[in-house]
Image (cartoon, rainbow, N blue to C red; front, side, top):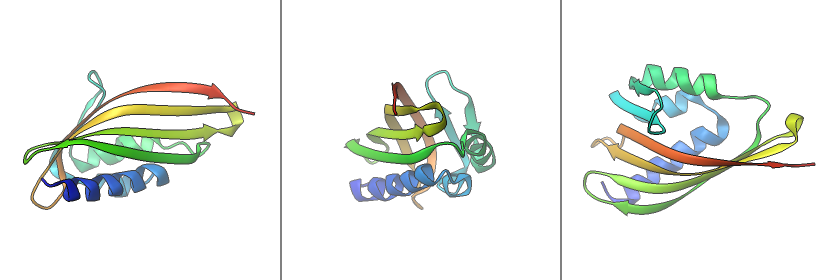
Length: 127
């Protein structure tokens, strides 16, 4: 994998995230991909399970979703990036910030075959 290939994939992931689009997210993964949210999270296998989980995660009350990343390292086998995201929940008067790490393995078609992430959150009250 090259840094440009990883950037292309992360940009597409970010668009799927900020639009809460399960189809766009699932399309980024191979048929046998694994996807794990957090070290103890459910291990998802394949685009169908990834789509299902993203659809469950989508929250229409969430607004102003933002996603940024910083590539930390890219080798032939893996890309590691820090990601930062945030979203507002006006009905609860809160802002949620995420800061985490992605470990991503892509195939030759730039589809992800293995995805792992870790993150922390911080919530703030907003007026």
